[in-house]
Amino acid sequence: MRITNNQMYENLLSGINKQLKIKNDGNASIASGTRFQRPAQAGLDYKTSLDLRHTQGQIQGGLEALTVADSRLSASQTMLHDISNVLTRAQTLAVQQASGQIGAQEHAAAAIEVQHLLDQAVNSANQQWQGEALFSGTAVNQQAFKQDALGAYQYQGSNQDRIVSVSSTQTLTSNVRGDEPAFTNTFSALSNFQNALLNNDQAGMATAISELTTASNNMIDLTSRVGGQISAIQSYTQSYEDMKFAIDKRMNTHEAADVPALVAAMQKADIALQASYSQIANIKSLSLVNFLR
Image (cartoon, rainbow, N blue to C red; front, side):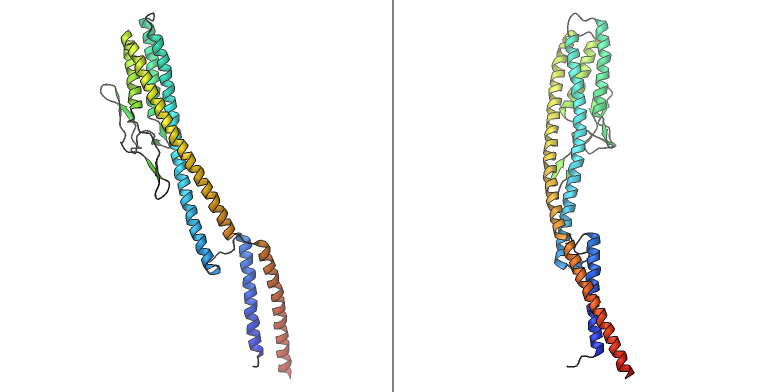
């Protein structure tokens, strides 16, 4: 079969386009650091990348949820520690004031300090985190505690916990609610202690020691429970960090461009292009000679 100059020319152009594509794809891969940028370049590999990226997104979402839960609970734990410190000071004060040798003037001065301690405890219980009430459950715009007509502090929040979704099948509680007995016991014990001081009630002061001890133990237990939640969340976070590292490594291995191989392929493409250009020049020369004849 006779191959015409036009056929040879078309074949060479096709080869040139192929080599130019190798160079263009190689440059794009080197620039992006990935083996492919479009589905057409690697259909199955592209689908695998999409699946890996979906998994990456799920893991990242889980890590963000865990971070929120950890931060919120850590802020709650800090406030609980503050309340525990208030109770510790109040216990020390109660033991001192329960002595029969302390007079009314000293009791009155101590009552002022107890009022400050009560205010501090209430302030900690009404603390906010990122503009939202820490201890009000899902009623984040509602102050957790307010005084009623009799001066007692009442819980104003919801009875529902704040839940974060770590995955499609896993959720975690990320808050402490103010309807925990530790809070009301604290406010009641401090108020009763203050009233006993104002009334020079020695029996009431002795009772206050017991009430403050109970409130303190409750607050310590609650703080420890929150610490356990934080530890569990940090354990989950480490697991998710490990998964993230594994998926990121797999993604990098799957998509990473083999730069030395790409450079070698582009160099071969350059050689092929030069040869093709040379052959096209020869064809044009032959065509001109034939025309002149």
